[in-house]
Amino acid sequence: RRGAANDSRDGVVIARTAVFALAAFLVSCAPRRETGSQEAFWNSLSALCGQAYEGRIGAKVGGGSGPDPFEGKRLVMHVRQCAATEIRVPFHVGEDRSRTWVFTRAPSGLRLKHDHRHKNGSEDSATMYGGDALGPGTAQRQSFPADQHSKDMFVRDKIPRAVENVWVIALEPGQKYSYGLYRPGREFRVDFDLTRPVEAPPAPWGAKEF
Image 1: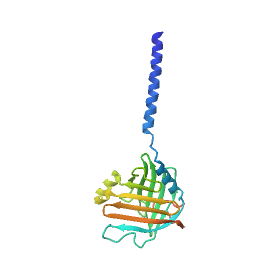
Image 2: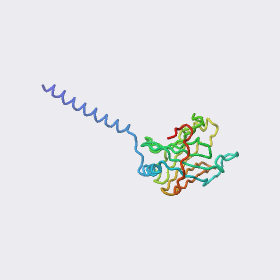
Image 3: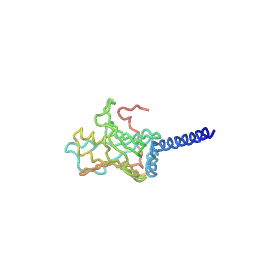
Image 4: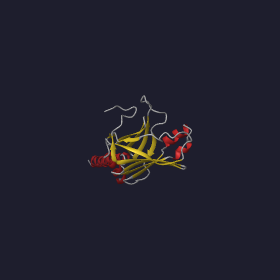
């Protein structure tokens, strides 16, 4: 009977150890939540859902020798779709509706990607580039260096200088939203006036009207 009792106690210990090991495994696999400042940034962006705003070029240094695709065009951002883990913000440049900024709550924190589409809705060969937020950032400013997927894409497309891209989003609630692209020798920023909402533009290419 002592042997049976010992076996029973051993079984309980083994079972408990297995439960603790499983719990530790699940905790290690659980998605990490964004920092408080990232959450505040996300909430401020979510609060703009459904609104559209017109912008202007705030900084432009470097770039190619060809015509600037943004110069002289009406620039409009539309915080079009907001869900618990994704916010989609189309960025219209004149009649060009190919661009959408996609913010997500990823396991590593906030993530920014660029969804590029052709007029027929198909994906551009250069799409979904971007990266994860660099550190906690602040409630009003988040930086997103290019991730490895993006770097590989830029090298493939023969624009290796873009591997150093860092996209910076600044958001002053009720005042201004800024989208910036930075790398050595290149600075480009568009500032949007949050004090003056405009009429929402048509759906971006590849998305349905609603």
